[in-house]
Amino acid sequence: EVQVVESGGGLVQAGESLKLSCAVSGFTFDDWTIGWFRQAPGKGREAVSCISNTGTPHYADSVKGRFTVSSDNAKNTAYLQMNRLKPEDTAVYYCAADWVRGSCQDEYEYDYWGQGTQVTVSS
Image (cartoon, rainbow, N blue to C red; front, side, top):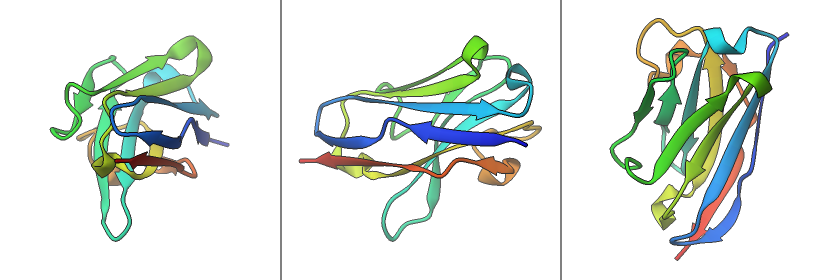
């Protein structure tokens, strides 16, 4: 059984940092792609970042230069380091995992999702 579990969300002030973790189990981690998505109140889910099984990262324009995605295959865990957070980054952040053949920023490429973790950035 595949399990995806996020952690690390919280309440911070604008300009501060948070690091999200995504622990996965039930599949060969280094064969899969990890995607990070977020959903703000009243909005649709949007891609934030993803890292392919080759280690190639991708970022949404809104987070480039502030967020860094990484993975530790030995720990079956992916991370999203979020720096210089802004109030508009406030959302529930989701981690997703799958064997992605298309764009890793396409949410429909993923069958396995975590429960989400709340990130709130105050101004």
